[in-house]
Amino acid sequence: MIQVVLTGSEGQLGCELQRCVPDHYTLVAVDHEDLDITDVNRVNTFLSTQQPDIVINAAAYTAVDKAEKEAELAYAVNHKGAENLAQVCQQRSIRMVQVSTDFVFSGKHYRPYLPEDSTAPASVYGLSKQAGDRAVLEILGDQALVVRTSWLYAAQGHNFVKTMLKLMQEHDSLNIIYDQVGSPTWAATLAKSIWQLLDKRAQGIYHCADNGVASWYDFAVAIQEEAVQLGLLTNRPTLVPIRTEQYPTPAARPAYSVMDKAKTEQLLQQILPHWRESLRNMLLELTELK
Ligand SMILES: NC(=O)c1ccc[n+]([C@@H]2O[C@H](COP(=O)([O-])OP(=O)(O)OC[C@H]3O[C@@H](n4cnc5c(N)ncnc54)[C@H](OP(=O)(O)O)[C@@H]3O)[C@@H](O)[C@H]2O)c1
Image (tube, rainbow, N blue to C red; front, side, top):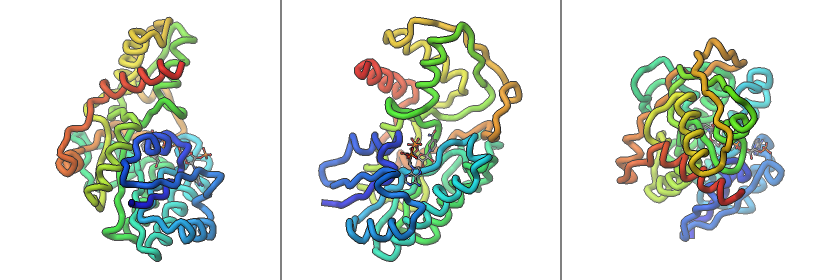
């Protein structure tokens, strides 16, 4: 059996990773309260006691806009926290998976980002994640796997899909940005792929997201169509496409953050699902939870 410690176990990805653990792994899942990754002594003591073969770091500070004002906290978790884990992993010959984001890219490209493309984050959140990823790769070398994903959502947790369902039920009209483009990703797709990448002993940087491309507006239109069909929504507000400048946010977001996933798909010998199929499956899950 391969022993794995998972941090951030109550987050969107943390929950999904626990739901699809392959039989040959045993998992010790810890959340913020059990293990604060910013505390290097606790990280050291915990990993010394558990002695896992692998650490999956799904813990992160993910409040993109709030991070602009809470830079210190964002860096403490996303940079220092990841670095703490990597240092102890290095001392104890533990492999580590660091989960990262499309927000490390500037968004100025108009072709999908390759894993080796240079990063240039436009926000504090993106910068703090970039610093964490670099630390993990530098400290652990070929014992590190960095998996970048994008626009994550799940039945558990806070995300665009659940916010849209709530707002659509309450309003007659909603303004949605149409000039930011990316790939919405169900955390279940990512979780399954992370276990498969571990099986393949992947190392270095991989991109993992659902396939296809959408703007936030396209995503919202699809959420509405699917949710109405499944009986999750009874209201059908008008969705109005707007430009980024019409909805200013504290943090800048990449205009284009589609990632190239060919390296992942080649290694796993499979095509990742289309985002629309994943969206439907997540909404189906919500109908069962209702
Ligand atoms: N969400 C997205 O759209 C998105 C997109 C691309 C990449 N990602 C990346 O994907 C990964 C998973 O994201 P997610 O959406 O699953 O995040 P999430 O739902 O926000 O979960 C993050 C988890 O980390 C925990 N955490 C925060 N600070 C911690 C600390 N100091 N020590 C230990 N645990 C701590 C949180 O606990 P508390 O809530 O109790 O603080 C929470 O349970 C992250 O690396 C994120 O950067 C996310």
